Amino acid sequence: MRVKWKLSIAACIVLLIGMATTSNAAEQNEFVIEPIFKYAFSFDGDFAEITDKSGKWGLIDKTGKVIVSLEQDSRSLHVSEDTIIVETDYLWGILDRKGNEIVKPIYENRFSFNDGIAAVYKDYKWGYIDTKGNIVIELQYENASPFVNGHAVVELEEYQSAIINLKGEIIKKFAGAQATNLFTTEQELYENYNMGDAPKTEEVYFWTVNKLNKWGIVNLNGDVIIPPTYENPSYNLKGQLADDDNWEQYRFSEGIAVVGVEWKRSLINLNGEVIANLNQFDDDPMITLSHFQGGMLGYCVVENLNKGCGFIDKSGKVAIEPKYEQAYSFSDGLAAVIVNSQWGFINTKGAFVIKPQYEAVSRFSDGIAWAQKDGLWGLIDTKGQAVTDFIYDSQQYYGEVYQFHISEGTIRASKNGQFGLLDTEGNEITEFKYAGIGYASNGMIPASLDGEKWGYIVVPDAGAKEERKNTRDIDLIDIVMKIILNRVPAS
Image 1 (cartoon, helix red, strand yellow):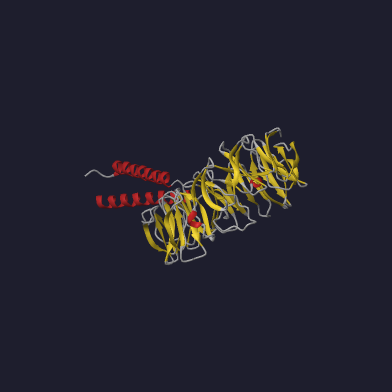
Image 2 (spheres, rainbow, N blue to C red):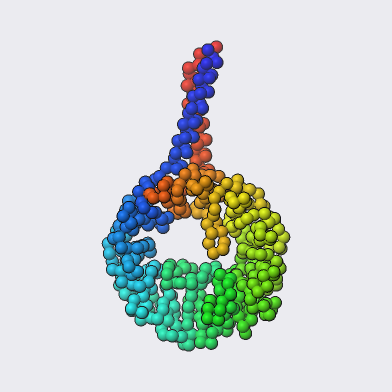
């Protein structure tokens, strides 16, 4: 009799734990906003862009409620400060947060607000409006940047620029020179500063160029940091050789920029001081340069392909000879390089930490990277140890580099043609059952089971879910044991 009771007890425990596990699995894959949209984008703050079944654009909140629904000929929208910027037939206007029209789509540039003001373009002139659509600085300029900490740079006429304040008053004028792109000392360059939000930082400067093709830097107040004395170093920001007409400005990375001095390459610091002359490249103009990352600047000799790619240190010396077929910049202390058509990773001394063995790799991010073997992908750590099995499908490829994106602790991946999410330890934290899945933002992830209807799931917290699961299992076992103790016949 006692044996039968024990068997029944065991069966109950297994059944209840199985129910708890099933319930937990369902919970982590549950849509919190039902998949009813033709497409859904990641949340930006409290709102996300969607398109409905008819293709109309709109905004939803975190409950899935449609806040704004646009006409079908509207192409895009984005939230900026307290407004919604909407585009229709390549013209941009403003709505309030309830979708009411503030300004009809009349401006010819995609703009965003910063300091409560946006640079707008209409009828070949630039000016500034506030969030109510009022023109606060007349449309009068040949070009205009966003405001950053109360300052903007404008082009008054060809080769005459000025820095203005929020009232449109000129703080400093640059006669015979153009003030152009914004950048920060954190190396973020705003090549098309009229196309998006400006950086919110005190460490912002403006490039300037004069009629003699010389480059320098001024700060927000117009103080000259580096006089315009340097030439274009003849490379562009993608590390590709630039022609004479391609005026790609040099940029700072880790406090150093490559510039031209008498049309020879040099390294300068933020004070404009030459810290090294790259004399070793004087007789080899066919060379591409990237920018400093991890204390190293990558370069490739393209005239003699046998020389390949190597790295320069901050003193301007060749730290790693150009002997690799291809190389990525350093991240997490390692750079991916190709030897005999296989990828491996070297350290800053040029020694292999992970020997060449992969068909393709990404750069490292937070100590992990994608690597490909036998056509399938897996995650590895900085010691070359496998974090996951090599069971995942192709990764996103952009600009000759495989992309690796971690969003709110999650990693988007696909397996057998179905998408799901991993955590940074390589655990699968959702089922791989989605036809499409986006990136996590503000705790929400756009996802679709069939590729046609999109909704949102929550960002799974693997640790918290495992803890809840274990707690639930223990609670169920406690309940069963109490029942047992009360009902098992005494011996």
